[in-house]
Length: 294
Image (tube, rainbow, N blue to C red; front, top):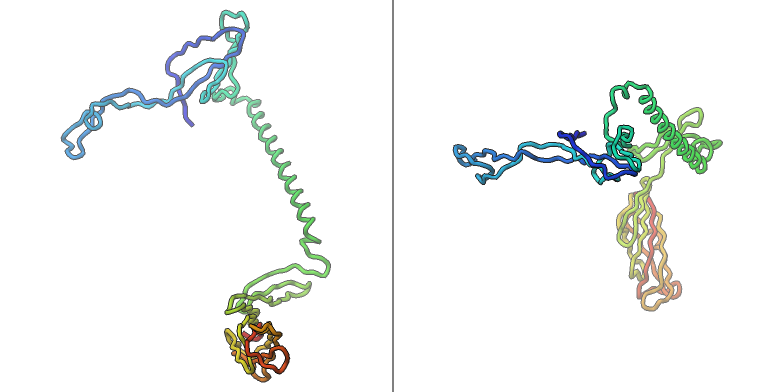
């Protein structure tokens, strides 16, 4: 907060009669009392200067917060209203009853005003009114939120007949687990969790220690063709294969896994074109689906 002062009496001329005028104050911060100040040479302190850089120029020595008092039919931008002067038509002099404090005038309350219970009660009434309005807004917002939640959640917090509230969801060394109470005891359930990533020609999906490889191979042909998994399994997996049409000829292709050849690292296939028993010599595309212990 800053205070501004008008140090000298000011005489204002009322522009005319038959109008209401406002006496206003325009605040400003001014630097005054210019004086040639003494300086010294930083390189040689024994040498004194008159003014900065020995220029002989003056510099202000006093900073004041002052106001300029004015009167008009409106308050200029940056000014503050102080009093209103209502001059009747034909009036030739200004009397005290024509002058009233302007709305929004930046005056402190007087001691009698501060002591008045009416002054305090007015402030309390305003605060109470604002608080009541805010409480009404909050209540309306809460009611809307409750309605929206109830419209989307069935039962009490989403728990219906034969259902139980959850108590915990944790991540342990063996994977995530969920706990609920069935009414007499806590029940823990292990949750499936998986990770999917890319391999050559396809994807790897790992779920609770099991993995599935799905990938595509080009140019598989002939009999006892060796297919090696992009990565090995810890035990012999289950394998399924399917072939596309034969390259170049676009003939239908059949594929079968050679019995007894599936291992943790791969397997062998026979690829036949056009009809079973006719070995493919042009190659076909093959989709491999392998599932087993990671």
